[in-house]
Length: 174
Image 1 (cartoon, rainbow, N blue to C red):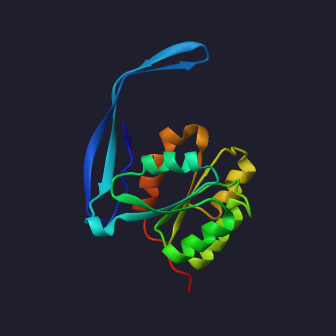
Image 2: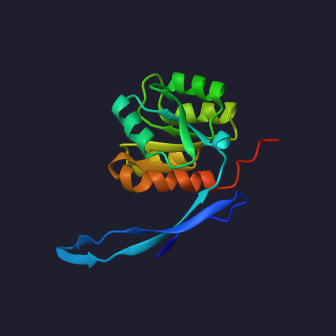
């Protein structure tokens, strides 16, 4: 059992989520993994205080996939398809989280994230990219809070969003 809950000042509802029986293969040997439970803690918020998320990807189908995966208590407030549009919309909308692709037209997601961080210091940034190169991941995590590879989006994105939203608010620069 894994414990995902972070200590938070936000009132939360906590529960266990059961996962079905799965089969895994490791070095040619099939392992049977039974039902296990995962501790989940979700913020309780009034409708008017939902987490606001900006989706940035140059492929509309990916934006739709991510929009459908947003956790309860969050909503998409806008979408952008390139770097300059991402910075403009983030500055205008002041979202709580930006989910940002790295390979964007105009300028890349890491450069966009740096500009978003300057304009919106409290906005959290989650990178969602096909790139799994350690140097790119390291560079992205110097600016953002999380990195999810598109190949594992179903498994990793919902928990990354929840963890980033439950983390303490970003400190404002002095």
